[in-house]
Length: 330
Image 1 (tube, rainbow, N blue to C red):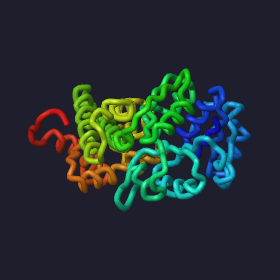
Image 2: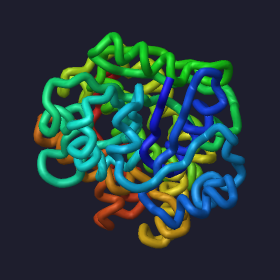
Image 3: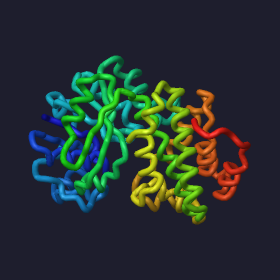
């Protein structure tokens, strides 16, 4: 099976490393930055994103125009940030190859579209897939046990994604609920900022549990408004990814919340990471999309106000705790 992973960030590199260890896979990892690729070839490491991972010998590295590389691949996997998904789809669509993406979030600006909505606008009705779930890149690259979900309305493409990446250390489950899987990946990052804030203020384990649970309710409400099924949010791409990102020490979004709680400015917190914390950039689009749909998301609203400097950490907590009583559940 010939697979091209397009994007040499941490997650794209980790998935390519994993796939290249499986029998019967021919894997290319494509990098946009020629200088980064030259360094990776020389060192057989992605020094910027996964410095502790040796790139397996079978993994082939590539840069340059996409068409010559991708024209005969069995599966294309876009591993860029969400901001680049639209341009990548436009470039790859004429090739007519099966494709999926790892991107999580709503597109900034305009209508704040999810990946499948961008695909509909750019490509049309051609099949596509999404790979998501609770997965820190470092652990996948290290071969630690992980489970993901492959989502597509097309049964053949779902099966192709499972076959491409399912192996001894990575289980891949399937779903046909693309909106649900995408909403989970889009919302969990800003909820992780909120949870980091909660822990950074030493509010306790009770508060953390309440925040994660009510955050899941917000995520579900938004998903239902976008055509998802409620049960999807109890799976890997909903509850699973939320728990990992909100509580895991490797989570960049959680770390942003921790640093803000300690009094660091947002620009300082982001600069200290060395990598992108998607929740910082997606919070506005999540809230704007929710407002447009009439969906109430008080935690998301408070995170955005905090990031915008309209609330201090303690004020954000007070705003949430001071809300009127409500019924539990979605």
